[in-house]
Image (cartoon, rainbow, N blue to C red; front, side, top):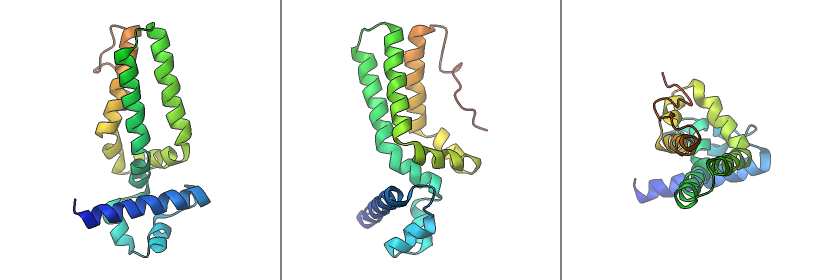
Amino acid sequence: MRKDAQENQQEIINCAKQLFAEQGVAAVSMNQIAKTLGIGAGTLYRHYANKSMLCMALVYDDLTTFVADSRQYLDNNSSAPKVQFQFVLESYLHFREHNQDLLKNVDAGSETASESYFYSSDSYQDVVAVFVQVLHENLPQLTLQRCQFRQIC
């Protein structure tokens, strides 16, 4: 991605964060973000096809941190499987709670083309893999193939 496109994308992210913090995620439209930035809606939509994808971009860092922290914990901790599961679940619930409003909009986009984007994304597959890893310790017969959190049509 070109440097100016990366800068534009970062400006969009920063503006969305500010507007969402001030007014709430549900109250802010894509057009409002574009207007606040002084750009055309088409420019905004070239970066993010819909609000769901913009919200996913906003939670990406927290999701990546959850996955990395969980993997590190599981790889370096010899606690009982039940304790490991509790740690991962609590971490995931904290992530969900912290990003609740954004994730509602990610999920709201699941009726659109963004469903296949999110549920087939590497980020989502990483979350599934973390849960398969921790659940496998409790249920050895569980495999990734048997662990379907979400079917993609």
